[in-house]
Image 1 (cartoon, helix red, strand yellow):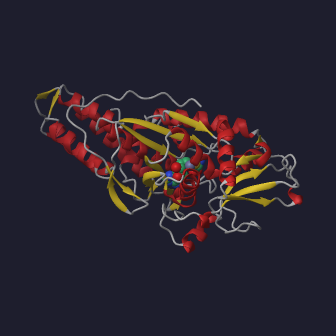
Image 2 (cartoon, rainbow, N blue to C red):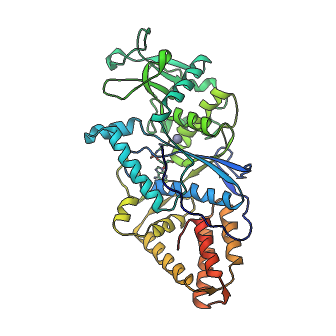
Image 3 (cartoon, protein in one colour):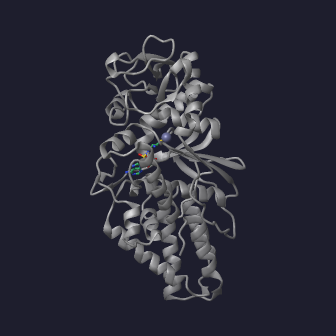
Length: 426
Ligand code: 5CA
Ligand code: ZN
C-alpha cells in the first residue's frame, strides 16, 4: 500500500543522544543499539472507524522514537501493517450495510490525512493483510508442517467450505504450550492472560483447542465472509490477527529487529502471539529486541476505544479548525507510559503553549540555543520524555519573551530543532 507523504525533517546542529526506552519484556530501561539502519515495526490500524486520540498518541510516540534515532545518525526502516480484513471491520461493515473494502478504503484515507496533519513520519513499508495473504498462508502451512500448529474441525453448522480432498473444513491454531518462549514478551501469569484473552480477539471457548489460549492462525471461510485460496493444506479462508504481524515483520525486517511498538492493549495477546509464532517459524529469538508500549489514552477516565464509541477524533477537531500542531502538543504534554484522559483544557493549554512558542520564535535574535537543544535531546533520549522536552523549550521561550536575547539566528535554530526532534512546526 502507499503511505502518506513524509514531512520534511530539517537537520539540527550538534549531536544526537543514544536512545533508552522502557522494554516491556524485561521491565527495564534499555539502550537501543541499532546498527546503521534501525528497524522498527509498529502495529497499524484496523480501519473500521476514524483515528482517535489514542491512536494518534501511539503513532506520535513512535514518530518521536524515530526522530531520536535519526538525530543520532541512524537511518530507519519503519514497517507498519494495516489490518484491512478482520472481524471488527467485517462486523462494522455488516452493521452499516457497506462493503468492507469501501469502509477500509475510506478509513485508511482519513487516517492518512490525520497522520499528515500531525506531521507523523510515514512507514517505509506500509503493508496490508489483503496484499499479504499468500505469504501468511505459506507461514501457516510451515507451522502445520513442523507440528507447531494444528487443525480444529469447523462444526458443519458453520457452513464452512472444506479444502479440496478434505473431509471437512478446518481452522488452524498455534500450539502455545509447545513453545518455550510463550509468555516471554508480556511476562504475564496465566491468570492475567485468561482475564483479557476473550476481550482482545481470543476464543477461549472454542471446542477442540489444545490450550484455551491457543490463537487462531487461519480461519476457514464461513458463508458471507471474504476468503482467499489457502491452497490444498488450508482451503479457502483468511489469516488470524497475530499471524499478519508475524509474517509482515519477518518478511520486511527479519528476526531480531530493534523495536516493536503499539499500545499497551497489544502486549497480550497480540505481541506475545506474534513473537512466539515467529519463533515457531524461524527458531530464532528475540523477535524484537525491545517492546515499547504506549499507555492507554481515555476520555473521562475510560479507555478510548472504537468498540465503546467514546472517541475524540483527530479529523473532527481538524474540521472544527483546531491547529494540528496544538493537537500534537496536547499529546506530547503526556509521557507515553502514563495513562491520561483527553480534555478540552489540555487542548487549550497546548494552543496557548504553541502561541507562546510562536511569539518567542518570531524574532531574528534570541537567547542562545545551545542549552535548549542539549536539554531537548537529553530528555527525549531518556525514555522519550516529551513533557521534559517541552519544559526545556518553555524555559527558552520564557527567556526570549521576558529577557529578549541577542544571539542572531537562535530562534531559527530552535524552530528547526522543534520541527526535527518534536515534529512541532511552529
Ligand atoms: N490493527 C491492530 C494492530 S495489528 C490494532 O490494534 N488496530 S487499532 O486500530 O485498534 O489500534 C491501532 C493502534 O492504536 C494500536 O497500536 C493500538 O495499540 C493503539 N491504540 C488503540 N487504542 C488506544 C488508546 N485508547 N490509547 C492509546 N493507544 C491506542
Ligand atoms: Zn499488529
